[in-house]
Image (tube, rainbow over all chains, first blue to last red; front, side, top):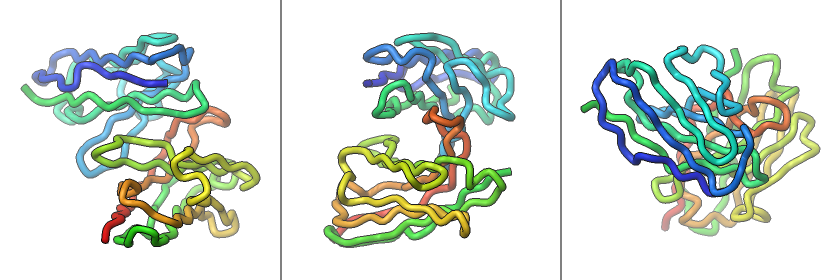
Length: 106
Length: 120
């Protein structure tokens, strides 16, 4: 399953809303996760099951979608939210990641 | 709090071998499947291998099948990735990660990673 994330880069200001997209080449049901990665760090799980927040994740992060189209929304960007974001599907035997969306400060 | 710490990375010539270790803390290690993933600028994030909690089930991505072997020692809370016949395209940061939920291959705890460079 190929995952395509868009946009490649999102330039926003703190306090703004961020909407990140992940599209799968075939249905993965709700088997989709989102990760945040900051420079020099490992990925951090944000969302699993398309819409369930991982432990400790602020409620400004939300996930939605089913099948082939998924969205990660950050309701109001905090300074620490500027990072790379990856989606990952686990509905197919070959678990794959998207190429990432960079959320940068405008 | 579960923590994972990788070690064993380094620089190796093509055709060489390395053994990575993933040491864990936390009481749930022995009941968790542990995965290896890697990240490189060219390939992005890629799942590499998994070993079940009892070590009886292992899976690998096709590109490392026959070259990499995953194992675990539950008495030492450690998972290993033996990498043989290394290729330049294996150059990456290697992470170990804990499976988020049994049978669901998302990853809720990651180590900090260890860098493997395959170069002559």
